[in-house]
Image (cartoon, rainbow, N blue to C red; front, side, top):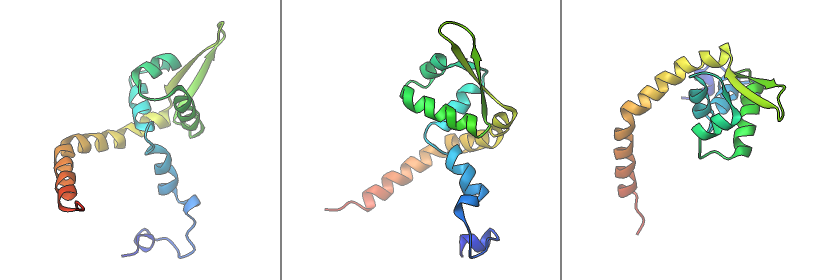
Length: 129
């Protein structure tokens, strides 16, 4: 079955205008779920956030935070200190994505062992000599 037809899309479908692709492309990046999960507990400064997601580079964290702010999923508050400190917090929209994301996280945790076993079996069955 053609996925475009199954979703009721016309043959002149524009992927850039598809809400599913557009939103999921941002939500499903490597770092977005970790950042959102970390901010779910409450607002954090950049350095605090970086400590809680330690394997992300500062540059990637900065870019990810900008993308999430652009999408309206988090807010950025600058405090007039020297040097200026910045705090990030989930917006109402950002908090709302945590419900479906939480369900996906639960599913992943529940099925992780099955998926690992399936990958191992597949890899063994598809070894090249």
